[in-house]
Length: 281
Image 1: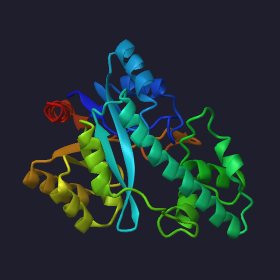
Image 2: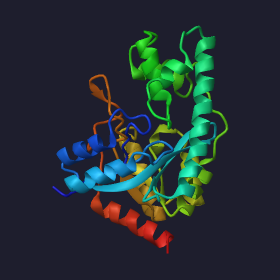
Image 3: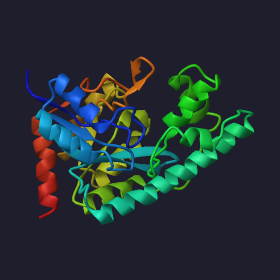
Image 4: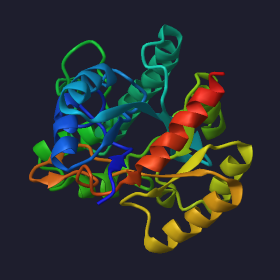
């Protein structure tokens, strides 16, 4: 079997449940040659993963998943080979996390208006440390604990997801600004899980704007979507990536999909690396 890479995974640095080193161990167990750490709006988990990767013989691709809003919904842009140790880049991400905190406050307020006894303090106690990168899955966990919903899926369907009773979207950077942020830092910008957005016009707009790649092999893209995005990527010379979007476990189940279940070839990793090197001159 050809060596593969999982190019989309999350850790405790954002809304995953595993330490970065645990993701690396799982990658090694799955027989992967490479793994990307792509936490939401932070690179805080990359250094630990790099260290673990060096010990276990798994290449770690420093990444990030940048949150933006386009046409009224969350649009995520993956950045690969980003300068995770660069202070200026880290400061740009801080402002994105502040917007995430603002959204959490608005979500909690909406849930309280709906008569749910949830507090920001109780949600935020789920994360330790000063860099509390809290997201909607943490709010969903609190709703499960309160007995308001039974599952993560129900929490998103009823309250937190697009169309949910408490859904809010404060002003954020646009997907175009997210692409620019990543590329100006010397990274490679790839549109995450386009099948989730139900907005192929926006996908085409972002391709025309200058995307470097599309995440084709993702658990939330159906087979027809994979074919369509592969065709567009071929037409425009874009990189086709793949990843599980692993967030650890919610109860007994892996959240999104198990690490290593959706992958890309090492040729894809090389293309991403070359693009990043070209961008940095």
